[in-house]
Length: 192
Length: 192
Image (cartoon, rainbow over the protein chains, first blue to last red):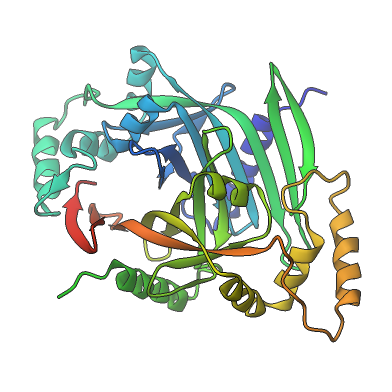
């Protein structure tokens, strides 16, 4: 049977979604190489999973600049309700404008308006100013299709490495690793 | 008043501990630069907070090799119960053998035994083998003080950057940043 870690990832994600106690099962830590060369990281919600990899989105922001400079990231999920961790490492692939537009269209209105209202990561004197800007855009776009802002992009993370860890608090961690080797996957267990 | 982001971090951590719903408030994502130069990350529990920074521990492992090669990391906390995120970036400082021993002594017995039983991150044919090794060490060290294994180390993460984010699902994120500038801290708000 062909090894398919992306399928296993989707199964684990679905189990976590069904568990019900986790309000944000799609949240993970996105690790990048900072513009200063040191690690940088933040939590975000993944947009979806395709047969090629994982879709993430972002407006023009520090993480976008970082991924342009070094198109390698880690996505790390921690699901304490099921005592599971998934570690993914992979390449950042820019999507076509057509795909970008499709993905933006599928976002909910609030996300769309924030992507217009916020100049993400830039300094702001008054953190409540953003609310004004948001309201202004809500008005401008009322009853209209909200177009994708130029600076908004989606990215495909094409995995090269997966680690699935299950933690049994009364026993030991089981750590199963899949590494990409040319076009196929190799599987092994590693020590906790 | 002197800015003290480490104090603010401790206050937020204490609040999360008191909340009660979070079983592992000290868990965070540790991001490193992999030996291949790409980002690497995994969840771990911090050991403690001092007035100098954050203490993490690890046996001889991939993350130890990575931190030796590039002594820069990110520690990222996500506390969904309080809708808060803390992002920390900083330098990895090796501790003295005396401090290493003290910190090891303060770990609970299970952690001590695992640090003897597991050759962390190395391949293992049978994931249940580790249980045998653990039992053997439990027997060997029964009623004895468990010494620190040579390969076990603690590290001080000396922060240079903090971001405190509060997410109000009905309103907007408030993002407060502290950056170290020589010996003091600078504070600013950034956009969500």
